[in-house]
Length: 350
Image 1 (tube, rainbow, N blue to C red):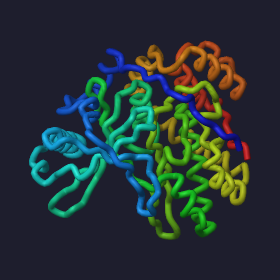
Image 2: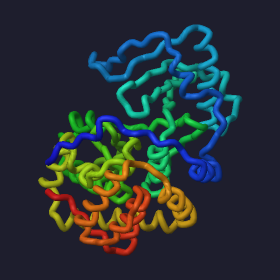
Image 3: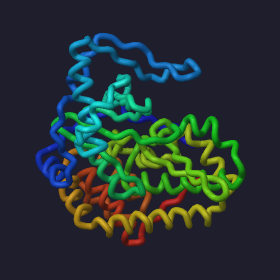
């Protein structure tokens, strides 16, 4: 099990005109009443601690009274756009309960807690700097994964819905001591998640960058692993960076796979996931082609990273198809084309 870390600072890439046209066509571009930079006008922050008193690495932001009034109106409108297609009837019941800021993330996100005053129920969404690779990552998640993702873009501001689930690191600490039946299901889902990330080259799936959604079933539970961080969509040059199996924090789940599954079973689950991805590509073929006609021409990483990843994928697949790739978009498309051509060979190295 190797330990992996991303580049110290990820370069941000602007959404170009062609990609913005694509996003507009598919209703991802929405005029927003607030820009990301306006969220930076906080006057003070205090560390946000969890229920056990541990630092969450988020800070709760505070604003002047006049700024907070404007921000509250704008953020509740954004929530209405995100959840009710802008229906303003819900606004009178909504209020911003808290705004948290994370200075460590590449996108330096704000997490907004919205509360319904009628029943004290709350929900969250995120305000981030719009970055092209991150938005491609969200769009690919919506197209190729079993999950739908809601997000909106306006110039350099990105709004993302909150993806509910137990953070992966918390899940690994507290939920792996389960029945053998559930442990097998957890390991199975990780195999499928590992496959999804590698096929579309989504990197940096350390345990705190994904969540686990648990659904009670007739016997035991069903588990779904969902990525929540798309900063590292086809950015790094190392092949292993796109395989969650190689991150040290994920080792306890890998150990479950070693304990409960044979390699033949692992390959079966991989083939199942590839078939599902292939079905999703074919069911949204026009949009898929349209997205990659834009992504293949876009600059999403440094040329040396593209060259490195091209060489490593060529060696991994024993295929010369990657030699012709000039961009990260080319590499992602070629990886998926190998899947659809049934030439894709990838196995978790226990």
